[in-house]
Length: 230
Image (cartoon, rainbow, N blue to C red; front, top):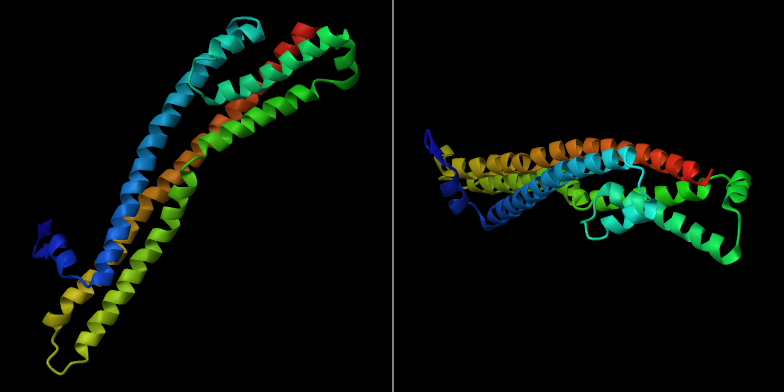
C-alpha cells in the first residue's frame, strides 16, 4: 500500500503503541461491520423472496389455516411465518374453546369483533421485527463510535508530534511521521464508520418495507378468519 512515498503499513509499524492499538480497534470495527452488512444483506434479500412467495400462496390457495401451520413447521423462520403462526395459534385456541365449552364463535365475534386476532398478529409482527433487527444495534454503534476512536488516535498523534517539536534538534522531517499517523487515524475511523452508517440506514429502510408487508399480510389473515367464521 504505497503511492508517491506513502506507505500505510510502514506508518502503522512506526506509530506509537497507543495509535497502533487505535488502528487495531478500528480495523476490528471494520471487519465486524462488514460481516454484519454481508450477513444482513443476504438475509433480508432471502426473507423478501420467501415472504413474497408465501403471501402469494396464502392469497391464492384457500387452504385450512391449521394445515398451512403444519406445513410450515419444518421450514426455517421468516417474517411472515412468525406472523402467521401467531395468528394460527390464536385461531387454534378459539377452536378448542368452541369444542370444550360449546360456544358459538359467530355470536362471540359479532359481540367482540376480531381484535384478539389483531393482537396476536401484532405480537408475531413485533417478534419478527426483533428478529430482523438483530445485529443492527452493533452496526449503528460502530457507525457512531468509530469516528471518535479515529479522532482519539489523531489527537494522540498530534500531541506526540508536538512533544517532538519541543526538542531543540526537532525538524519537520522528524515530526512528519507523527502528524501522518495522526491524520491516518481519522481517515481509518471514517472508513470504518461510513459503510456502517450507510448500510444501517439502508437496512432500516428495508425493515420498514418488510414491516408494511407484514401489516398487509395481517389484514389478509383477519379477512380469511372472518370469512371462515361467517
